[in-house]
Length: 298
Ligand code: NAD
Image (tube, rainbow, N blue to C red):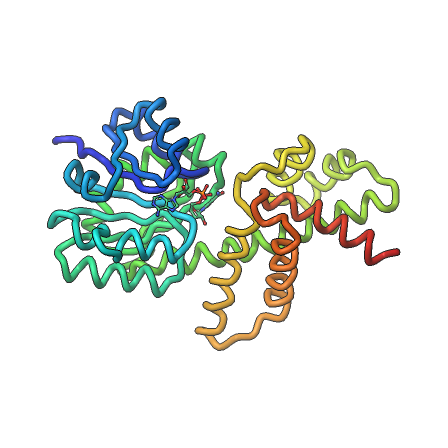
């Protein structure tokens, strides 16, 4: 069996370590990004740079994307000289980005009409999961396309789910996951602000809650990996979380349910983002919460 050459667009916090794992596993990987620094890092880890989608599709019929917003995903797939226009027949396109479910379905329809295969495959597990190849991958789409992609998924992740024919099904579940991340992140932030306000040591509180019902993966991630080290570089930025929570809110509208706390939480993240924290890691929700809690408590 010949090993497919791979293409990857979006060499960011997730895409860079994902491509590294593919290269280390022996794949020839062609990468594209608008950021020149990222391209240099990608080359240094053994990748081959493609400057345009035309260059990319000339090299490979297996292309993945991990891009920040639905708008950018749409442009890369549907724009002039985009993937759908330029990819060769039979090309498999896989989107790891978190987008709106309707975009997954629209891209799948457009790909089908052009003889291309498309999988919506959002991931969870964060940068650490991308680095350690332990991602959860939630795939929606055709089973044959999934089988073709499976060896690549196996390099990138640990828990791989084919969830149904519709390419948006994985995204729907991913949005539920990120809604929970939004709640946990704010909960952890408020709890630590409260602990500190009454003189408790956050380290001691973590030691105890981590073996109690207050424990969560997000508590460990946000506290032990970021806040404790005073490191708020993303990771997963507040703006990306806000995007995902808004997508979950749109899904609630589609389901005709009104989620009071989700709505309030989105307002709060929006405020935090506008206060200048949006580009920082989600753990920086603590910094904004502490500042606002002190100001409002005066
Ligand atoms: P990021 O902003 O770090 O990376 C995105 C990359 O895309 C950047 O390198 C950027 O330069 C590049 N890019 C932007 N526009 C481009 C274009 N037009 N052409 C080519 N490249 C372009 O984002 P990320 O944290 O890696 O997230 C990527 C996706 O994965 C998002 O949809 C996010 O919601 C999702 N996600 C992120 C995490 C996380 O923990 N960071 C976890 C799971 C899912």
